[in-house]
Length: 472
Ligand SMILES: *Cc1c(COP(=O)(O)O)cnc(C)c1O
Image (tube, rainbow, N blue to C red; front, side, top):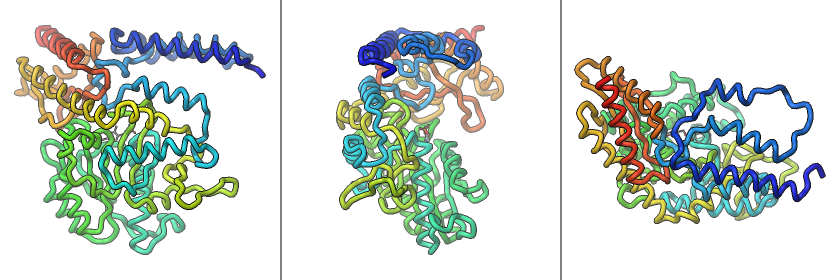
């Protein structure tokens, strides 16, 4: 034994102490890292270790080296990107997941991991009110969820055209038409690239001012040609939070025999809130959906779900078989049938724990609270001279512009300066984005510790920073 039971105890308790101290200080911590990338590089950089370092000393060293380079993304005033805040219940479940060291690929080899995942999959479909027969793959995030769903889509539409892509590959296959909104998330294009769809095969559908696909433009594009077709819609536009008109889109897609995929990385969680569910009407008719666990569900990274209504198509695209694996008996769910990886961590445990902790009601309350806070922040900011809110606050996303827009370049400059100033003050974190050719500041309200008071403190910091920039 190169590490004794006593040392294991000391080691894991040390890690817990570091984690506890970090999380307890987070509410008052400065928002951005105290040191930048280059300094962090210099601190971690050292010659390849030749010999051993005692276990506990390694963890102390790691925590000490990392400390100044950590961004308070799990804190209450992070609005930078649409990401969750690693809820302590998820963190604790994740610790156990690592300690247990289960290879989650097979239900007989790791029964508890498979069972927790299967129950969590059922809970997800229930809370999101999606067809209970759907396949659910536990992947690393929405990028991979989109990839898995679109792989299932590719196989299914080619299968209908008499082509088995799993056996024959893509060379010589009938062309597949891809319809996608102009304001789709960039990672969907990555997924399309991974799957062998070049950019020329993609038809971009016109969107409205909020970034929603126009239903008439979609229907027209769908009618334009026949043959295999995959339509990609979106629940929650990354800047505006807007939802595509799923009812109309799903009808046109069905009329055309197209597979409808929905990227709902964060927005699909609107379905968990009775007050917001209407925004997603019609999404339940989609053939596949991608949604994240590490966004609104607050699970630690990496966690996303690929949901495919036709479970057969899902498994056809992903199944791995090998002579040394036990295989799948009747009525069994093999976790490896729904994801690209063979060996992987048991992602189901953290999802099981988070849903068990929050419950349907807790998730609804959190989504609703974030939407309400976003609305209030927008209202407060818009009341300040020189600040304009550019979107309707339908969900949790706010896009903001600073300065008088008579000269757009001047507005871009002031918006950049305001963002920079806010980041320097490090009370809260907001990022920049481009929207309709202009620079904007984006606020995403999606962290579980964000309360109205924390939002108010952040709004005050944003307004202060803006006044300094304006009067400077
Ligand atoms: C975050 C996001 C993605 C990518 O998800 P990852 O979890 O970062 O891989 C895709 N689409 C939308 C709309 C997103 O918000």
